[in-house]
Image (cartoon, rainbow, N blue to C red; front, side, top):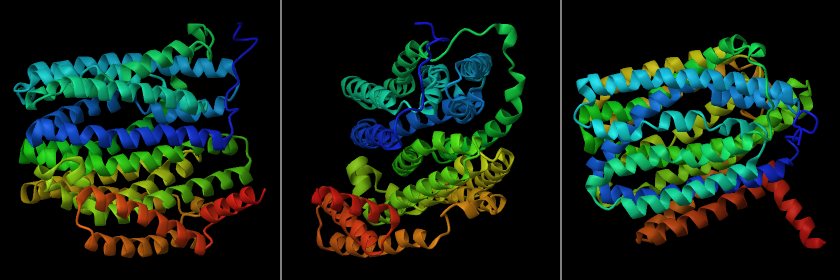
Amino acid sequence: MNTLLDPVKIGHNSLSANFMWNLLRLALNLILPFVILPYVSRVLGPAGFGKSEYALSIVTFFVLFTALGIPVYGLRETARTGNDIVLRSKMIWELTLLLAVSVCVGYVIYFFLVLVTPFFRTDRAIFYAVAPAIFLTNLNYEWFYIGIEQQRQIAIRTLVSKIAQICLIFLLVKNPSDFIIYSCIMACLPVIILVWNVARLKKYVCAVPFAELDINRHTKPLAAIFLAGLAINVYTNIDTTMVGAIAGDSAAGFYAASNKTVRIVIIFIASLASVFIPRIENAFHSGNSGEYKKQLSGSVRLMFLLGVPCCFGMFILAPEIIHIIAGSAYKESVLGIRLLCPVVIIAGCANFTALYVLYPNHKEKYYTISVASGAAGNIVCNAILIPLYRQNGAIIGTLAAESIGLSMQLFYARKLLKDTELFSINTAKFFIAACVMTAAVWVLHRIINQTAFTFITCVLAGAAVYALMLTLLHEKTVFGLVNQLKKGALR
């Protein structure tokens, strides 16, 4: 097939189909960590688990540093190029060249630090084990496939990679000394996604003469996105690094159990809402203000629909969650979850304001300023609070960072937010329903005293009460779904 004459069309799937495939992918990302984490945390113990998370947090800095903000920027640019294969190909080759140079430079710095710095000398082997993550994560083109709305293919790739991850962990991680093997598996898992994505990439691109590539046109927008991403990484990963360095491996393990549990929920909600990004970018770029506002409203309702009950529910069920996921050795992580659960809503609002409002309106610099301020606040809080409160001091620092960042974003985007439902009466309905749900869950939690059964019963009952309350309050999303189900039942 001649790609120039017969290009593969993109963005032809319906929003509902993309949503369902994205839901499947994210369900896998949500469920499977809860399969792996209980096993790994128990086998490795707080110290081994803390060492692994510590090494992964270090390499994550380099992954983000070498990514240059391209996963966010590339998704946006992919959505804007549409079915113009020449523009699309030019953009992909330009970003690939930038990434290749960046990854090479990143590896030089990384191995220099590992070989020379005494800080890495005691556990050098684990830093070698996680090193492949820099290449495998940055050059897998996942951002491109999200931009062209290939949610079905992404879901299949996710299923294959997660099954491989589970099999390798259960087969190879058997005792506390296997923390290096576990770290290597976690770092090298993107190899499946990379091979799959690169093999299919030729269907969507054509050859472009090197002389026609213009890397400079990407530098200014990438600089703002890169700095913002770097700042975000500081206060999502520096915590583990600082806790491990100041309070020890066990405290890092306790912190990781709390943080990973809450972050799984945050990532799940944010990724589920990402199905709206290509449509929002296309609508904004084409000047279709009506469609733009419609997609904005849909994304913000989805964020509150899922985020609010998760926040309230995690606060009540924190003991059961930690016992199921990590075991009794991690009981110090219960308070961590309760302190950190508001970040589910805070981060959701920040993600919406940044990706759906500031970025399409070319106001990346304000997002950069916001998250940089939050990161600075986080480091200061960590330095003061971790020596006093160990892992919980880092959690308080994260709360401060997320709150500072969101407050500044809301200030910069205050005029643009008039087109959204972020502060509408409809939003208050989610909190009202969640309060009633929390009361019901609290009563059940007091009556039932069996960990797994308590958790399952409370989740199911809470979901039912929450959905019932939203229906009674005529919340748009749930009430519309109920009406559709009634119509389908009457046919």
